[in-house]
Image (cartoon, rainbow, N blue to C red; front, side, top):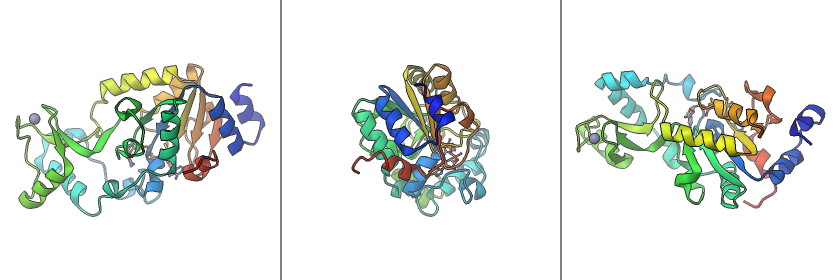
Length: 260
Ligand code: NAD
Ligand code: ZN
């Protein structure tokens, strides 16, 4: 039975989520900031989320202004480092379990918190596709030299700024994709391939308003995969999904009745 029958004709229950998952052979997950709120990292758009507290820094401004660069490091190193303190939650662990069992092939993530890698996914270099980079380390924008955050934080605290790359003099930046920065080509291609190859695409905790990332559920659905969206509030793609669950992710995935 096509899943759309479930969505149209039945009250959607957690049992139907379980059925859909167990009937699928190649699942791809797509995760947003909502997956990590239960690990204590605020999302962008919920009330009290990051956007209500500070305006994002545009890539062009970061490149052209030393003041803006130092402001971005100030934000990074002031206050509590929520990302460093966070631990994977039940949602991350369910994803890891399904990937390690071979039933799911990968997770495409908009998150920058490294929690998928920390959740026990084997071969995470190939299974985790980061569309917006990773905030737990930094890179030189010119030569790609890798920098540990702890080292940069020490330099920031002793010198009052983060110096330029010691290898080539280029600008060092957290390894995330900022507003106005090009999307990473290789990751975009991998995400496209995975979206086309799956039979079930599950969105977890994304408002699905950030493009091009939000195009992947559309690509998968158009190519014939079933689309499930689990998010506590409505998204613009609910109308094309086969199953929509407006619930907390942890509570919803816990009902898949695995032991965590
Ligand atoms: P978003 O903030 O736009 O949307 C998150 C969605 O998750 C919201 O619709 C919210 O209602 C829902 N949500 C929050 N907690 C939930 C829960 N426990 N259960 C169910 N739903 C829940 O996030 P986005 O779509 O990922 O886009 C924001 C951008 O911000 C991303 O591109 C990402 O790079 C970045 N970001 C990342 C992190 C992180 O790495 N953890 C945190 C904040 C922002
Ligand atoms: Zn360099």
